[in-house]
Length: 412
Image 1 (cartoon, one colour):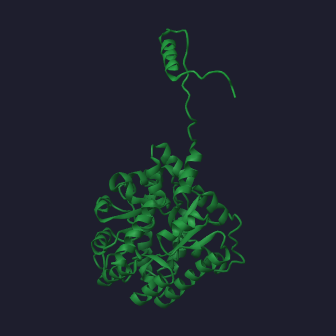
Image 2 (tube, rainbow, N blue to C red):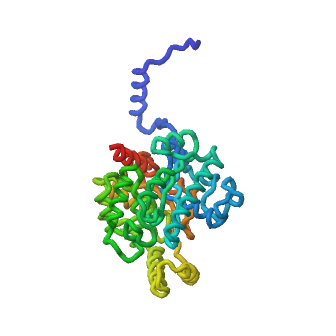
């Protein structure tokens, strides 16, 4: 034991006061704890809440590249031809992923239903093939548990009402197989709603669409209003008893793309509930790329009129040629951050999330090239002054809150 007597606290205080009164003779240094660096801060947030992405088209990418077979689609290896694999999901801190089971609107009713089932089957086989990485989440608490266990919670989203063939029976079966949300329409009008990129047919929702929303509320299935017209968005908010999601949309006030969400819809979310999961589609988040997108839509309409059908397969080839002659402008990570901040400012920090649309886009945002880049986006928002609380809400807490509310409505 050290025999030196401890100096009493009041003696220390008196001494410090004396030294402070000595003008210019002694410089006092303040001792503080080290400031947490940005990377460590983001990593800590991603441990606290599952970073939940609302939309990833890997199942369709697999269908295109390997006919849904894993022999030629190894997710353990980095592959430059796609945006998603296990190493990059880990690097990006992804904790929960809605896998989109997209089917083109050109498919007929029976073909669309069959292809949707095959896409869901792909997701299930993927989880079974990599059980140490993925686990199916049956609800929001399950997603939290899976994330805490170090795995990626996996959910399914159906990207268009056409994939049910207009049947509520099919809708119920898709839910039973694990579909957690359905987008009411995609590129063209569905039996349920007007698409933002088609000529209006119902003035928003159809009567079948209102019945579908009621059934989704009863089941606890999330209603997705991405891809639909503003009229359908408003009517969807009116019709749904549970909060809605926009699984991959951005702010129309910043980029005037028809698939983005207008401010008058955003202003309803604090009362109605819901979350807009900001997407990384370049034409949705950049004005220049958005203008290109409008010209692309105009070309689509021209081709539909030329061929006399919106489902003619020649349209896709003609659009590919048009795209070569009219290359897309690049969008930047800061553009995406601007959209996130705009939605947070208009609707509130409780109503914004992330929905990248990786492997469903042919062009990417500069700085957000694949699923490994989410921390870069969070770091940009942190640099802009976002608090830990608001970053956690963006990452996943907002979506989990909406999901819990949908389950409570179904329980009633």
